[in-house]
Length: 392
Image (cartoon, rainbow, N blue to C red; front, side):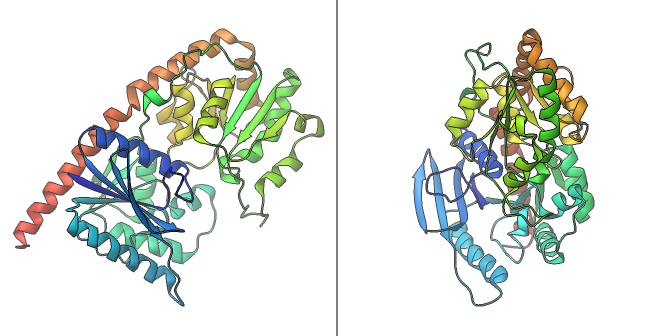
């Protein structure tokens, strides 16, 4: 079996950008290789064109092309031609692509296409109650029409995306994102920096970061020495047209509270893991997600988490057992849960243990990879039978 992944991001020094999509893809890719699956990753929108091998994976970097007009169309056709060349020459059995921007719209691939719901623009606009450009919906809708099947990381993402695009629910398989448990181990879970609250994620409105100043203020009313550390890329704010959400966020903190806040920007994967290890509590107040990889990473490292109380989080966290679920807009309640964990070391230990156990039970990448292999096999077999009927 030879599976290709088309993606705008992938964690590698030669790749321009990598975030949640890239992390979840790499976790799956490496687990598939262990199972004997041949894997090629095609990363588009890069500054160079290159092909190289790493950890048993063939990585193709597709250099961005310049067009005088209709770049949205010719860009996709360029990727289509490149993919089809390798589908034929390397006998690729199936291509997986993300839903974001409808990258596979207008593409006619010579292998069945699976689209994974990492979170389309349509999906996030719906959750944020934000107006969407028709062009963006059109691209994503066309991409959906051309897919043979779909994978959703949560039942919530499956149901919402199905409704938004009018898909057939039976064609959508729910397979959670997985984690390499060996890469996220905490040999000393009782050693942490007391009072350290950690947020990891993009500094963007939809992630709920603008709720943190009010929440942190209430935490410091009970525990003045508490500290807040934020890690992640800064971003443009659509609502205010500000070039920096962090600059907006800084203004929302009380002066005294801001002295206890550290924004560290984007950091390496290794550095992020070290901060998770140091944290007393991890917080995830996001309003819009399909899954949230860093949440299960923190849980795997036996950290108590306070997360948003939305449907996708309810599939990841058992409230009161492996974490606390609270609406981010309920500042007093969110802060109360943080304070409880900062004050009760035994509860932190108990909840951290339960979080690790839940990740081991549900989100182990080896189990997740097998579920994907079974799905890919079904789709490939079905495609072969259809081709036989058509005499191809």
